[in-house]
Image 1 (cartoon, one colour):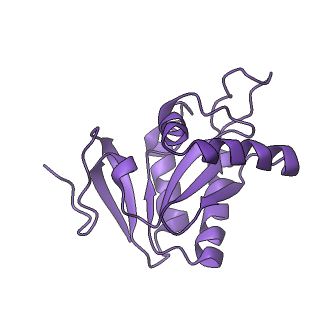
Image 2 (tube, helix red, strand yellow):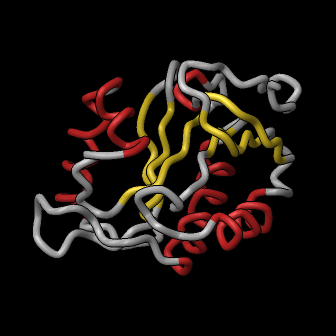
Length: 166
């Protein structure tokens, strides 16, 4: 069940926080930067995983432990040159990444998810294209999915009920 909420995803109590990045991403902007600043090991481990596995767009990578779980969805094209900004997100990458996320939810037995407006900020996609994919791939999982429709810095969303704060 998908609940639209407003708030700061970094204050989420969901089992996993999901965000979109590119393969070999430097986590220099958007939610990725905020996650890197809060959990520096996330970025280091992501870069190590990329060097070891050479992941492609559309994959999902899970990081963390019992206190925090972050799922990185590879929704954007990689940077043409290392150190440059990654490319734009592609609907096909988002589609495949959400399928990967669905598989991860079932294999890792994730109990709830918090997602931003995936691939629409730095990724550049239209929310009207992405939102239906989230509903299609995740809507019937039977777990709470908190979709952060509106960002409110420092505000914890009302995740227990799934209703937006006024």
